[in-house]
Image (spheres, rainbow over the protein chains, first blue to last red):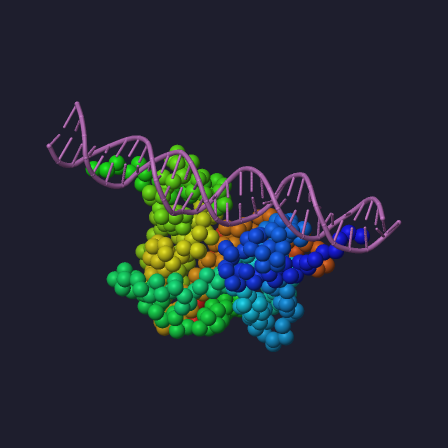
Length: 206
Length: 206
DNA sequence: GCTATTAAACGTACGCTGTACGCCTACGAA
DNA sequence: TTCGTAGGCGTACAGCGTACGTTTAATAGC
């Protein structure tokens, strides 16, 4: 009998993500989100309790299509690799939400489902008890770190250029490596780092 | 001939860190920092250009005693391990500044010196060209991710407890792993993950 | 001892943020 | 047609970073 809602949470999340993609994380405010939807600021509070909940909505929206079924790759390390690639692919178009995702990693349902699947693969591969804890944490630490680096602009960005311009006397290797780094593609960087972790994981179970 | 400064940047940084340790990152504001020092808010701007520069000062202060000489461990992987332990030890008492450190990783001198040393070790171990780039990025990604996880409260914190309370029907392994996780010490978790990365790195060069 | 000079320190103010609170209004059921 | 419910909106407040102008303290030169 009450007045019907004029907005579904999906549209709210999509608008917030659009702002983040366009203006960065700092550009997202309750006012800017409301303006994007053509509503008044306080109208948003009919849909979210506070800004924190809006950010959670953003996280869920970005990962809404994340496939969390067990991949059918033959080897378990490749299953893990595929799972990581799926996350990275979902975030590719919305890199700036990565910090939000890390902050909300324990509350975001999609992340929990993804983690459950990773644990399924690890368990089938023979990990259990403390080893499984360490394996999961190590993998997630790398994934978070790598995604965050990309989100903050790792290779080829202004940060790398600053390092490339460092005085050769104080930082010869860093300067050299930064110059070399701009020639490494983002995909190669991510896959190379992931391969390191996967090799280390494989050595744990054999 | 002018009026002498009543404050050295060191004291400013120390005060800011004290606030962060006590009240968290959100507790640090220009006003709270000034109050901590018994000065007026605007007086701080004689020492830093803006809040960003204050945060950089915080990063430098936290790592002011970081030893960036090449460790004398016999094996190169142990040198890397020691270098990572040194960073973690410096941050142990000030975990909440980790996000600041990651954001300022390209500008903080201590981080740059540390990275140069890591590259020295990697180079001596035989890494060069793209491999060295990938090795460094992978290691740093893990380190950042692991430190960030600890900073946000990884094991035994409320987040883990939430996961441990998840419905067994939907998240059997996640629930079980979270319950097991509280028995793994922070040191073991960090070292276990680092060992994974180091094994993967060693496989790269042999 | 006095004064002029210089930068430190401070006070005020502005636009921004998240959001508590209260009012108005559109809608569906009766 | 009327009423109850909840959606939508406007106002207001505390707190943020900081631009700008004024005041104050300490010293160099006389």
